[in-house]
Image (cartoon, rainbow, N blue to C red):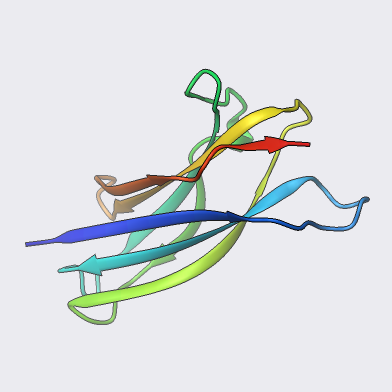
Length: 116
């Protein structure tokens, strides 16, 4: 039996004013039954008002990292940076974990936040 789980949180703070606007997303992954098999974490930015994925390609289904568990039951955590569009408004980030065949194993949404 294979199982996996993702949890997501956003951190406050930010880069200097001249840097691109974005957020840091911390996540943890727990994977069972996938020892030695590749999986991929992808993120997408959603409009929280409409619960819809943003239309821009650079904000949809972006690969964050590849994972290869070294044990039958493995876990870890990571932080990724996600750019934000100029448009202000509430957003949330969805992380999805896919196996090597493109099958979604797990997903998690961040809490909604405002782009200021």
